[in-house]
Amino acid sequence: MSRISNILTSQKTYAVIIAALLVVLPLAYGFSTGILIGLVAVSLASLKWHRFQFDKALFIPMLFYVLMALSVAWTSDLKNSLRGLERQLAMVLIPLAFIMMPALSVKTRDQILYWFSLSLAILAIFLVIWAGLIYESGHSEGFFYHALVAPLDLNAIYVSVFVSLSILFLLFKQKRSVWSLITLGILSLFLLLLASKIIIVATTILGFFGIISTFKRSTIFMLLPFLLLGLGVLIFTSNPVKSRFQREITASNITEVLEADRFNKVYDWTGTTIRLFQARIFSDMLEEDAIFWTGYGINNSKEKIIEKQKQYNLWQGYYTYNFHNQYVQAFAELGIFGLLCLFLVLGVILKRYLSTKDSVFLFLFFIMLVVFITESYLWRQRGLYHFLVLFCLLLKAETPLKTIPNNKT
Image (cartoon, rainbow, N blue to C red; front, side, top):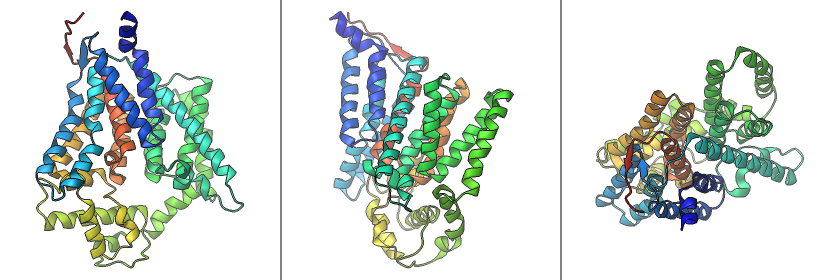
């Protein structure tokens, strides 16, 4: 029995399982679901042999889920909302697993993040090779944005978030080695190929200020030529990354999107304008329906969005879109308290950064603050699992705030 107890209370066990959960996120949903069930089971079994330690902030995602469950009382489509509760169940299971498992060290946390970074580098190599195999002369689109990750049916923006946080971790937290530098280089190129404008900008901002504040002056001067060269290539050559930035500037008619009564079916939408339009119709919903306090109910805004899109004559291809904004999504489905729960989660991350000065908290806070503007990140399984695992891992690896003794022998 001692061998079993050693396995169930070993940090290596949880490092492997948590890293595996992160590593399989780009794969089919069943892999991450299966590993999560395994993590919960192992954590539960470990309680026989250790005093479980937890941070009260781990209960915040559970509180968010309770609000979702309460919204079933006022939803107009019970079937949709029950399906939504099923999809969001990880808000209970992931924090619960971390509450029950033994304490983790910062060293273990960093090992998990490093393994995840290595897996993303392997993913990048695979996808670039695949794009090369199907490459047709004169058509380089397969190396960029959604087309690059299409073989695994992924969303380039979600993968960009994975990659961005891994780049920042490798740059500022991971000990320098040949492999870490190679991985950093691969992921940096991968982020550019993914061509998510807002994530590239956010990563650049964090990277710039991080380098200025933490690196030695000699190191900064050594890196400067490479940074300028990379910037020059992006600005002065023809490439899809530059084209995507230019299109947002030249094709986005913000005034028209916010004021027009109807749109042509072939209206030239950009990433910026379609998201502004979704925010606009949410404003209409607030005025027309009594949803400020309660929202429509979890997973019950889709039909309302389609109704508004039809009213404004949008092409039916957009009928599958959610709000593409986590703040609006939470507000629309759960009311003002849903939005406050979201801010509470982000606030905890920022507060921990201010108290610990651990830059990984800052990276997670800032990247999520930004991506929540463009994506309903927590309403998709990959985004939900990724965020919750990192949120719980960062809290778990700190000094525990509460310990409950276990008298079992």
